[in-house]
Length: 497
Image (tube, rainbow, N blue to C red; front, side, top):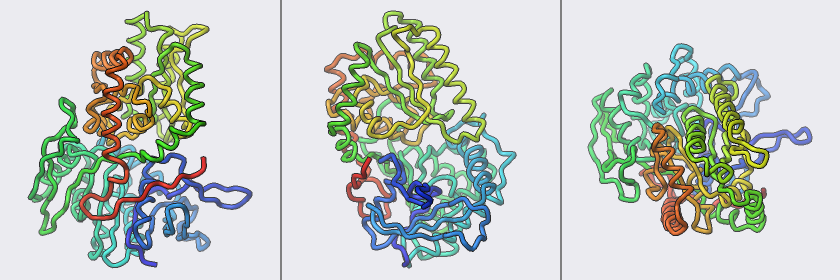
């Protein structure tokens, strides 16, 4: 059946596992990952389709089941799985996307590695995604493509299906021309994006950077700008923009440029936070802490997340303030990802070494300053930690949005707790009542965490009340493919834990 909405994303929309010799499709564990968010849009179309990859030893194997039908809590939809060999995935994702694109998008030029890129493979994989989308889309359908590893899909798709509407959303930062134009394939990438009807970003700064890159490479013109709504302006932060481009003209084709900060599913989190089990777990955590304050940090193991810099700040605070020893504890969750990549392995080793050094210098038989966790925590348990924590310390060096800080806020039914947030996280433009810090400055980082742990109760509650209002204003159901109208998704169904 042709689909009115085709979502193109590299991952399959479920976790595929084998139970008792049979393949089972499980719901994703996190309620605020991009997968459940995107699936929720299927509830407003008669039929939807999802395009993803699936590992295959032989891409031409006749027994490979390329298309399956899914019927789950989000509705009925098709999933087209593109068979890709391990070599194709490695070259397309781990090398081109993660070693070349990722560092440039996050402005880490020193991590950029251009030499091993197999551009022909990247093109081939993107064309396969475009062909699958073209085959699934009904006449005039909306094809919604996600993230930088599929940059070339819009260009190929426009050639194959000029009738469809094409939207593209970036979940990462988008850098200014001086950084982006380091990529030797810049013109091919941007020309493909200019084939879209809408190119979307989390915040106005990234939209402005994209427009400036397009103008630097082509005879593209900004034909409309708008004043950024006050709710997305946080004074004196690095990523704030006061106006933003909203329409570009290129070769007679108008491209909408949109910014729609991704929110979280507040209803789902509230239900988890209100559950007796979660409240009991949070109370137990608080009992175990005694009189100590809990600082919570949650993120992935990545050089963009600033994990090492955060731990070093904690070390400086303990050195400068002996009176805090035994009175504060840091729970640092740094989930390992892409374990086959040397850059991420190096960061994990650094984090472990710094945490070990701090515990060795300052720990006692009764008090360990840092608890380091390198695995994903089940979401219901994580909500309990959000509720028990005195401070959430979220300080990436660069981040497209960051939903952890919003999850923390949504979990605080008591209107208490302090958020310390990097000004280089996209979420900072919405959350002006966080304690905003610059993770590249030792003084700023140290001052921010001290201000958080010493903040009086009245100030904490006043700030948190406003933060919760900001998160409620921008729920996940307010998010969507820019100015290409589609009904907002319904409330997320509550899956069993």
